[in-house]
Length: 98
Image 1 (cartoon, rainbow, N blue to C red):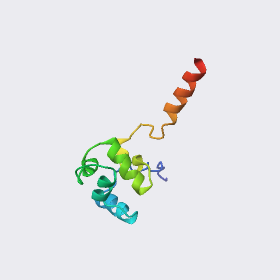
Image 2: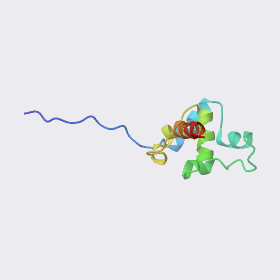
Image 3: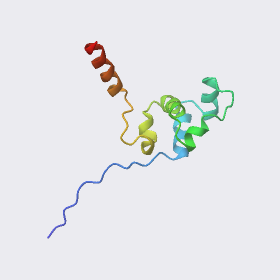
Image 4: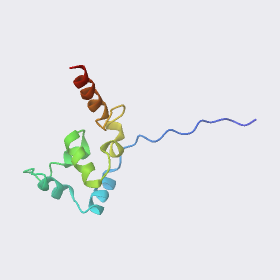
């Protein structure tokens, strides 16, 4: 008798901090340089996004790496549409109704 198992679900584990820093370095950035590039007075500002949810900071880091922030921090985006497709659909529907 064989035991039937279902396929494992994709892991919703956030990237390790060192992996994010390494990906930034591969892309030619550091957290400090990225923060100053975007005009933040404190070069350590973007480190906040590494420790706790901050959508704007997460997006800046993800854009520098070239990946969606939901792939870096899946636990912070569970069940949320990060593509903006839903918002655009709603706006288009509202324009048609007017």
